[in-house]
Amino acid sequence: MNQQQTALHPMTPHELTQILFQKQPLFILDVRNESDFRDWKIEGHHVDIINVPYFELMDGVERVLDKIPAGQKVLVVCAKEGSSIFVAEKLLEAGIPNVHYLQGGMRAWSEHLEPVKVGDLRGGGELYQFVRIGKGCLSYMVVSDGKAAVIDTLRMTDVYTEFAGKLGVSIVHTLDTHLHADHISGGRMLAEQTGATYWLPEKDAEEVQFPYEKLEEGRDIRIGSSTLSIHPIYSPGHTIGSTSIILDDTYLLTGDILFVASIGRPDLAGKAEDWVGDLRNTLYNRFKGLPMNLIVLPAHFGSYIELGEGGKVSARLGDLFANNPGLQMKDESEFRRAVTENLPPQPHAYQEIRQTNMGKITPDAEQQHEMEIGPNRCAVHEQA
Image (tube, rainbow, N blue to C red; front, side, top):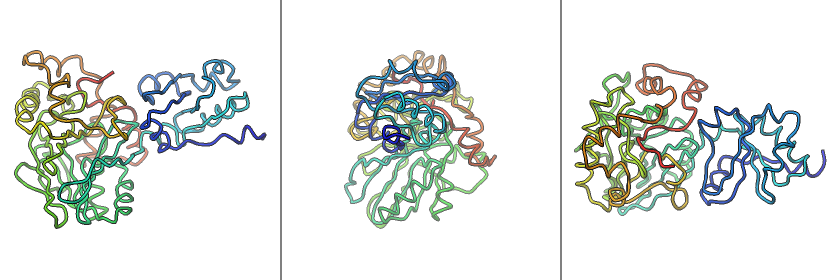
């Protein structure tokens, strides 16, 4: 192997995430099949991406050489990394410099979580957002006085335990703002691993097969011995039990009810017509009565455009009432049509995911991965 070929090295999901957070230019050659690429791909502010399936490049990469911009970092992507290594080596042999492959492929990309500090809390403590950039999921860790609470935990629970270990804090609470349908919750598992208390809205828990504490309005959840507390606020619509959280009188964690560029959909439990009124009342009445300077922190984002400074996803509530298209429909019939008709496709395996989150089925790790493949689809409007 010559010197040029030895230049090939992996790009980790963390390194790719930082490139996207910092809006650096990147050329991606995705060698998965066309249908997988159309359904779900890597996107960013300065990302140039093309799709040429692996089987079309097995005998040579000549057909893509003139598509690769000179002097730009090149990343080859496939499902699990094997095909991308083969193609990346061929590109190096053809004289293309600065070639990388995505370590672990799109499988690893789907499961990577990147912690981002949101801010310091007024009574002491910190708030972190965990960005699952490959799938658009967001979860949170509230830290105060040596204790921590994790909100809308994802199934990659080792990320939270390792991060808590680095901070020197113990996880004492895990909370789900609602019964999730697009990803498998790690809240109950993390609680079992750490001895924490698991919280779930009672109205979403009618069919769950395990014990939980009721996440309900008027019941504060203390963290540590400090004055920091979590205030649940009932906000149905995405699910009948959806419960938002006001933290430190500064942050509004909205789950899947309100996003930065969209609003939650009411149909993932087959109850769109039943829940549309709840959704509108939560967004247009309940949230309208909250302080407009609250910082909204959702459980999902739909596009890289929503990533702010350092990768953080957030917005002032007042700005969302001025700019979010889901909050501009004054006519109730218009709103009803928007959230019940012409919705995006429902999440992959969402029924099985709901059953898993209820404890009705227990898929193994590989099955859980397959159930979560693809983007999240919890929103009514996706920002292009």
